[in-house]
Image (tube, rainbow, N blue to C red; front, side, top):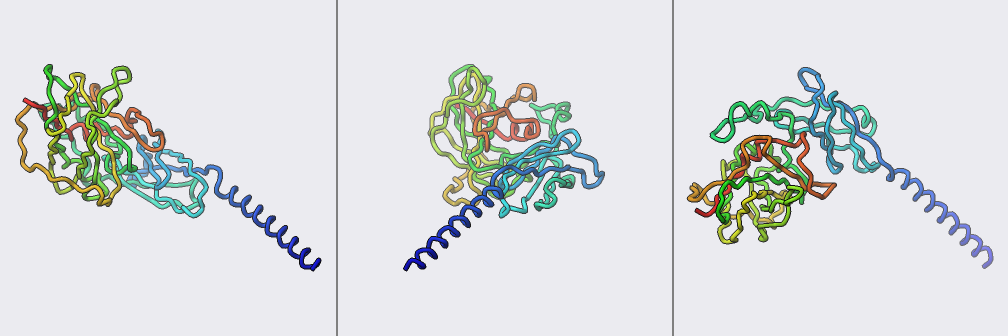
Length: 309
């Protein structure tokens, strides 16, 4: 009996030591940051591409410096390797898989898009403004984390009280940058904070989901039933990204060939007057859109807001 007890104690000690060693090894393996770093180069010229957003699956994003160099901290998660690293801007696109052994010496080659974003002048935006479009900016509206928000300021040049009737989305130019042919987005309308000028309280308190499709040139959302006031100081139209392929968010019926009868409000024509904000992972607070993600006027031209006559 005594021998059995001694053997039992020895086994228990061995088991505890093994568990301690395993937990120690696990902590060293999983804890602590690592770095994925390297350069983004043009696939033809092999020249560095500065100011582009580099994104890694399940990790986050960072921008390249003037030498095309980037550095992205990641947690030590051996099971997650390799990571997908990609760039998708108005002018460039490219991706690669990063394994642990090359994580600090990555070369990401990007090629120019065959159908890069082309600025088209109209009655609002002059041809001279085309030179202010940033071809290295990354459209993130339809390629971002669920729950992220992208808000565009809409000016109100009407001096009488009006309510919002419809919002029309011109999606033809956004389509080439979408990863999914039909992408569900929740429409949000925000007031303007009088101090910070950032998006403030919700003006649209109902859940209105709209699907952006590559096949549809434009789509109109009927908001007349909600009685949303159009503030005289302007407001923000925003979209919240939802989970791709989630059938819990059905696409509502569209209003084909709709012609507005009331005045139409848009984002300001000049880049200096435009304002866009993001509420994005991992910060989760409103921040001005950074230069590498400011795709003006791609999203600004997308919204047309009709108010009551």
